[in-house]
Length: 85
Image 1 (cartoon, rainbow, N blue to C red):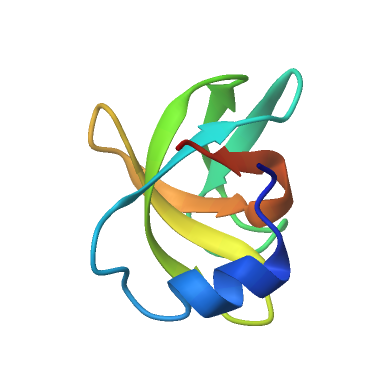
Image 2: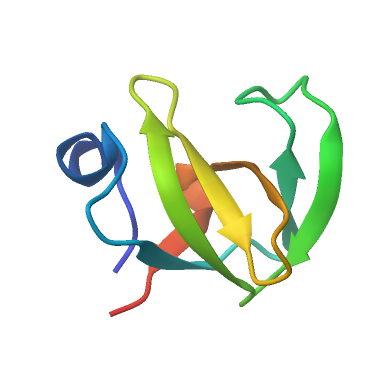
């Protein structure tokens, strides 16, 4: 299912009790950024289908703080990830 702002506010407005698994749905990929802004430094580009774990959400900004499989952390736009069930 697509992650939307309403579900994020309900589920990720504070650190989740259990990690939320997500996959990048953006094509060709999604920027992992240092801060929750499109002007922030790009740390790396995550390819389509890459799994990440959501650890927090910035209310009103539609950004999710995530950790990658290799331990990198940063922010991604919520509109470009899908929750893995």
